[in-house]
Length: 101
Image (cartoon, rainbow, N blue to C red):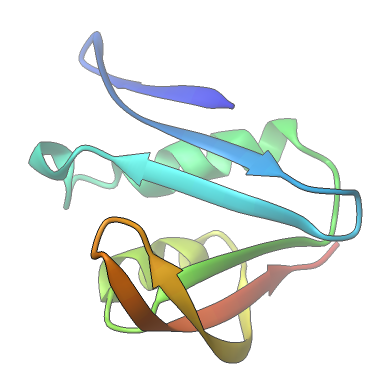
């Protein structure tokens, strides 16, 4: 897990969990800091320090900003699924993405 900092303030985190070959990337940026490229920068820095591939991630299908962050960092869409979104308190459509070597 890595902390995302901007202007000396903690604004979020990036991390990965799971077994090698099925590691999942996760990230979160405080809403007050959205739209500044911080998620993309934090994820790129994390990926530079994390040589393990493949890496997988999930994004809410309607969260275009998060999907764009993943695409900018080289992840490609590999499928769709439904999953429970804790923040929304309901099951949602998700896009599955993978970053290969």
